[in-house]
Image 1: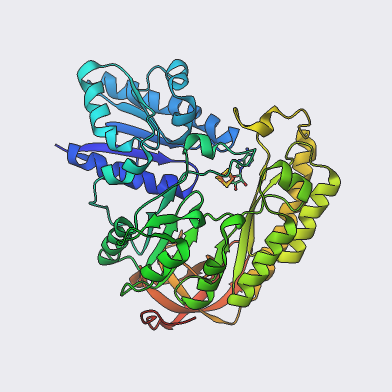
Image 2: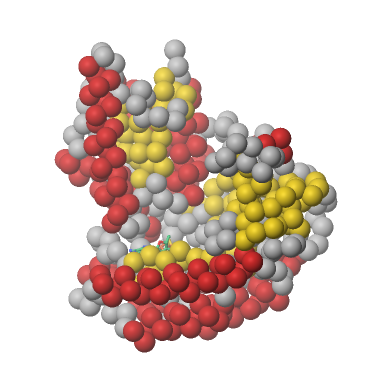
Length: 455
Ligand code: 5AD
Ligand code: SF4
């Protein structure tokens, strides 16, 4: 008898990946993923702790899951509720105190224990908590059988972070930096390619700090790993996310000019343009360092485009500091970016600072920065109008017959009457550009990139 599993994923791509792995590990117990919590036998909330809002959202969703559990119980059936992810790691037992109807609390390093935890709850009817840190074992202990992810697949290559930016919970919730061995990554990439993926995104909290062991027991960096992966037949697109400016080494910059199927779009968070704030954030780079990296990447590959994360209102940020951020944005010219209001996180050094910035000041800075970035994003998107771009068709659009695909620069392209092209890489003439999307028409099939071809 199959059981219904509903997973709600919050936050980053790493959580999206982990959710697929939780589904893998639960499949042998008969759990099949469903897209509704209503009649689920097991509801998992895979949570994010990065900002306060994300953590609070979890509690309101838990309240809703409880209603399903009660309704299901009235029909004589049992629904289990599990909290996974970074809020589980950070709050642990506290979650059970606030929501005693939760059955399982499991941290991101312990997903391989989920089947045992579920069996334990079923046998004892008591809630269980597992927050163990077993970094290197995590990936090894998860099953290799993977659910097909479609034309674009994510592969986690690295987890955790040793950088300790003073605003960030990641080093506490995900633990120390750990890189997966090369052979395990290569096997996973190969499985996805066999299942029909043509785009592979390498994931890690600090992905360019990657330093895994290869078959000969030598440590290799992200640049060497990308070159190896680029050799697979059928791999059309490679991406990696998220990177830290400190780890953009010469070899990695050079790879952008050497490997054609490494996409020319990089998400490289800078957080602020003020050296004083960057120092207080413990970022270990200046605004000038960041700009120099962008320039070097642009000379390695002239069509490179960039996006970033920004935090406005970090403790003690002045108007002058904020002006420096606007200046950096003007200098770089982004294809898009995320702007966050600083959110004090329990246990992080910045949360203890006395000089917290008032909310209305943060709001105003956020509006100004977002406006500037929107202008740049629209300008970037408009440059494609009239050109023909390779687009990977990924999902259905809102209207009948409509599909949505991605350009090399992660721009969403809406195309009419093209459902038959799902999962394919096609040539699209771009006709219209908006801030968050493009519109276009298919004019041909993409020629495949041949192995190891230079950019
Ligand atoms: N407050 C606001 N934004 C944060 N981020 C991380 N921690 C915080 C925080 N405490 C942002 C950073 C990071 C992105 C994933 O989330 O910009 O790059
Ligand atoms: Fe957090 Fe900084 Fe590590 Fe990124 S690099 S995960 S922002 S501590």
